[in-house]
Image (cartoon, rainbow, N blue to C red; front, side):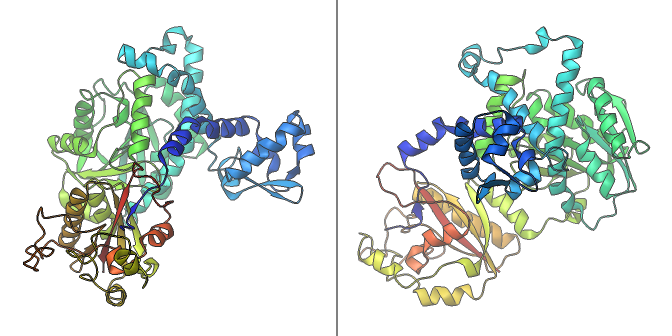
Length: 516
């Protein structure tokens, strides 16, 4: 039995979860609109007090608060409801990390999504509110959008800045399609010697100037109203940092090369370019849904792969890093005219290795401490009594004992947990490729344990009369065959799993890549 073959949902339950996904968002939208979290901040309130403040009846409110509690947004102590840390940090208007505006902006996108079938039939967007808007309505919508995106961008820049830790950044920033200016603003706040030029539509920059002035940056920022598809009136080779944040997905395959080439022309020989966007290689489900959102709600926006974007940057004579995933749903590509500059960024070896391995097609690549790997003595029993492959190939007893595995773990400080899917031969080949990538990346002790019986060779000579493996170079033990409790190890890494019940359930494979 291959314990590294695990699934998270049964088929019917997974479909049920998909069908009711909007229940979760509607509860959140309603709570933000009613300003529930402001009512509960600090001292909390009883159901009666909340009902009076919201002018609703207590009966339904109790059930609503129960839902918020199960979603991890409120807690009940005795008869009083309080915000959780999550709600307190991000859902109280006026707090620095408030996300309510961006949440309600997403609610506004629902109308377009209800026309998804119509968009598919038409081959693109079918609702064009711009045709119905007055200039005042357009400006109001733009301001609402910028305010919403500012919520998100202020969080994102906090994830981007650590990559520049230790560098004495000076000179000029060019922020293309700046939106709220929060990304450039984060750099201005962190590096006092920087100034910025913001490039965007006139209606956007009018509001952006208000936001930047409130932050005290009025003397360090220039504004150039520009449709970025038209020629830019900025200096060539004039900028130390060029930022393209959430720009790539807003334009078409024909337009992006032009934008990237113009951005490259503005970059100094010793400068850095920052591409910040959604990529399918990082968060495939979110990227696919955002791509649909662009299909529904924009004229020609779409999501592009890391490979395609890097190809376009190379055509503009720029060197690039791997895709660097952020903790959230977006990722970075750093680019420069001088490849040695990229080595100055604070990109540790493991971060870069994770990016390269994930690009091979693994669903998750998680860094874990070897102390969290659970090695048990009972695993071989499940192989001996429950699996028809016992005694064959590199399965027990022809695999490392649990004690040998424990001893091996002492020589490694951490590991990567790799998630994939069938077929087994393809998964195991990818694991070997990941192990080699780690070796080439400087992890000379890298060693992999994969999922299930070895499937590399069509005919296994070890299981046949010859009794010898002809492919010892590539053969590796399975996690479970070496005594690793895959289920517990994966659970401790933060993934929710369940044992397969039905033959048709979706299977997930896991492998372990040990690193020193």
